[in-house]
Image (cartoon, rainbow, N blue to C red):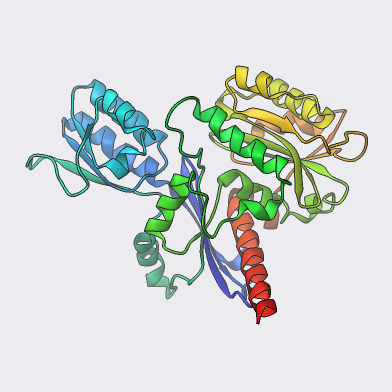
Length: 365
């Protein structure tokens, strides 16, 4: 199966990184955009509404919270109302009762707030293809038929710790074989409500979590991929989460996930050493306010895994690691562009999925 063009969008807390991949272009010559994420754009509008004392109405879809939720919290604390539809309210919490308890007014999907000429209406979404189409049109470029999007999705957690819930999904994945190809979705599992919301705004989009997209992207750096058969450690230090995995071939044998804001070099290097040794425990990471850790019983720390490939916008945390005596550290920068690591991973994963689907369809004939 031939795939000629793919639009890849890697949505983070601060930016949405966009790659318009064309098979006829060298990767370095493809169109690339680093734009503010929609949660960042909306947070600016909320802050302005707070300064002006305007009521706010949210409509649209579940999207990533982060900056916009923080801005709305301050808006409510200032005494100004925030109205929201049920779908948009899921941006704040999965449990709508918890959303109401935080001061939001939830209206039916087909109802608007009382007429107020000063009302600021915000459309919640992680992806807006109409906007991207308008940006590209003056350059004679159109959107391709294949769209691949990465968003960080904790999974729907109606009660209890969403950190524990997210890591339970990670552990189940590793226990079930840890296959990289299983982290790419045509139809995301029902618990991944943020991914499913993206598909309402971008019908037919291929979906991934941002962490796995970065892992696939690291493998597009030939220096890192050369160690894939013997096994190595991949670390993505994102703006929100830090993810480290033990990878051999295309199987993840163990991993940890933590919040980047709580990470520094001594902690990160210790966690990587313990991950390699197979001694890093779930409770140790969770008690430190991270998500957790898990190492599959099949993992044997006796050989390989001496290379640590690091990527992500906060990779500077691992800068001292290049001088670490017990491991070889490198910064992965596929095609010389670290900021697009997730997009490169999305393209690689989407191409694999589409090719495998095409081969399966051919075999079925």
